[in-house]
Length: 115
Image 1 (cartoon, rainbow, N blue to C red):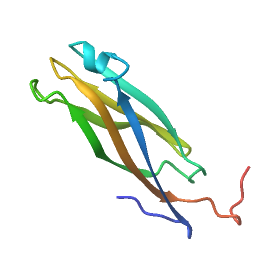
Image 2 (cartoon, rainbow, N blue to C red; image 1 turned 180 degrees about the vertical axis):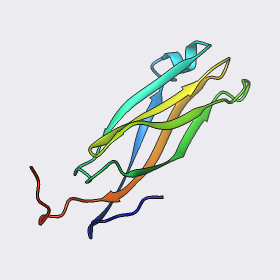
Image 3 (cartoon, rainbow, N blue to C red; image 1 turned 180 degrees about the horizontal axis):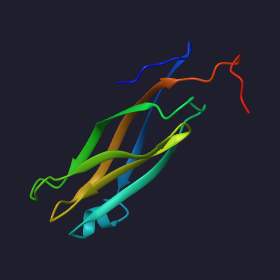
């Protein structure tokens, strides 16, 4: 549970097309085995501390003749951003994947003393 000591709470949301491999013949579509896509998401304003981040799949386009496996997570979370990471394995083929995200956290107060 997060407890906010700040009077200012920030909420920012966005979406990222993390996989677009069908047209480009990229590895998520053309190869098998363990594969990972990673993209840095930067917040437009810094939070006071690392915020809570919620991820959701906004759109997926997968090969229906293969097993559909995936792992979606936020990694390296800081007050200024996080790494969006999608991994798959085996024979799964991913043509496209769009991820929607929301970050919620305390914002710095103008009256806070900063060294």
